[in-house]
Image (tube, rainbow, N blue to C red):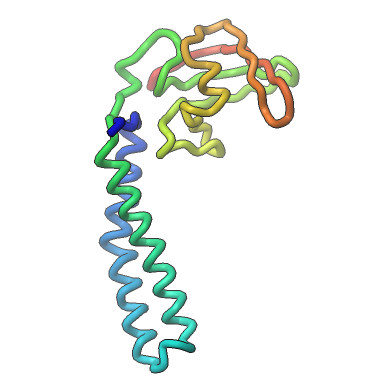
Length: 156
């Protein structure tokens, strides 16, 4: 089975989510199911069915997190340097709009584009990997071809 690269912060966030689901969410949904059962006929009990559906979601997420954490390989970006690779925070300038953006290249499990955490398998991340400061990269996006210049590379 392939190891999943993940940053220390991403690993800790997933561990915290798993602990919260097991210690808080799971017991709460079990109580909700028990309360809904007390209302009688389960075939027409919307509270019961909603609680069971939520329980299924929680149990599925617990299994997913356990799987991700067991296959994760924690990589400390602070120990890296040089050209763009996993864990790098890259400052870019869109060569068309002059807009500056900053992204950290992370694994799939911790990717969140809204927070500037770019999945290493995304087209932009693949274009950036192996490049150095001052390099330009061309990326095909749904909106067309984009050009970015790498302004800075940091490993934090």
